[in-house]
Amino acid sequence: MGRKVLQSCVLLVLFYPAIADQESQKSYFNDKLVQLIPNTEEQVTLLQQMQTTENVDFWTPPKKNAHVDVHVQGENFEDFMTKVTDAKIHHNILSNNLQKNIDDEKVAMKAMAEAGGDTVVGNYATYDQINDWMSQMAMSYPDLATVESIGLTWEGRETKMMKLGKENSMGTPKPVIWIEGGIHAREWIVPATAVYIINKLLEEYNIDDKVTSLMNAWDIHIVPTVNPDGYVFSHERDRLWRKNRRPAEPGPGKKCVGVDGNRNFDVDFGNEGVSFDPCSQVYLGPAPFSEKETQNIRDAVLAEGGRIKIYLSWHSYSQLLLVPWGYTTDLPTDYQELYDVAVIAADALTSVYGTEYIVGNGPEILYPVSGAANDWAKAVAGVKFAYAYEFRPATLVKRSGFILPPEEIVPNSEEVFASLVAMAEEVAKTL
Image (cartoon, rainbow, N blue to C red; front, side, top):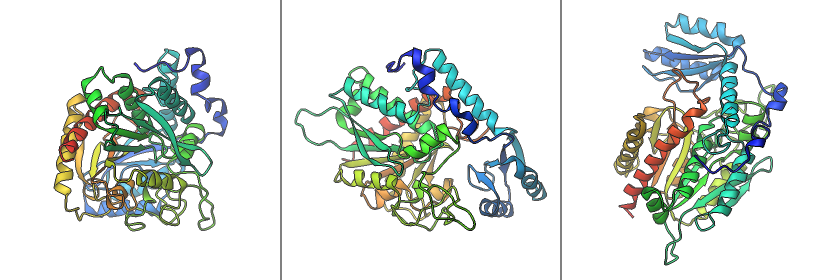
């Protein structure tokens, strides 16, 4: 499929630096994945309270008559289920041992490598592999791609951006599509999708008409991994790590690590869908843009001087296409225009494999979030068409949420690419 950048004789050595160090990895043995379906407002309220008072990890937010996916540690499971049962909340245990899901993912990745598959394109590559691959692709396609660092992380890693596009004959600036992903480290499908699309744009230029038209009309800037420190940590120490790795201020009697970068942008900061507890998965940080990772995005976006016409923030999971604003049900004045473009993009996505995405305002179809990147891009950086995607899967049924089987990377990427093309074509009509 993709360019065989690395030789098969070193696949396993390069692809699994963490396997030799498994003893230091966090284990999720005996942890459970539970799916709840609250059907009353009282049940939703109880679950919302449990989000902040119980030691459980809600992978999807409590909403009435919707699937609510929850990761429960083994030692907390009995107490959690007692409360769920007493509240008469419909529930289904989808995994009795979360570590098995993680181990199955490793086995599938290893099998792909041993079979001679591409270790980067269509796989869950490491941070170093992605960076090395991007550099090699830029050297192979010097007239279509360049790689640059947009800044360092807390631990000193470079945040790499791939700039794609064919310079026009006049040498005049083209509009930019800006794509960032991986701000949440455990969402491995996002960097994998970014890599696949970079590969497609380069290898199929002047072969695929849609690729060629997109590259001729737009410059596409893609940051596959906004949060390199967290991404490396998720590969080497904790598969489900979400935040960055900057040590936070001590909480009550405890010291915690990490800030949720998608709560750290300077837009409605600190109001909705955040926590002031440094140990929380959605800890917003001490101040807007307190984190090097969000500063890197801010500075790189503002440096474009208004050329960015589409801003896409990629996440997983839930199969949603979110239209601003993310923090309020009050809609921007151009909401209908943004919504119409999003529907066209979602329809194009569905046309590939039949995957259904819900389109709408974030608080209505997901949950309210302050300090999100795409809202900042629209409200402050002035990018009119700014969206957030939540990739596959829709629910945990037969899958494991963030632990999406690697065989789904290519189908997810293909449908997201179709969505990208449709959105670009529609937005181009307004320029």
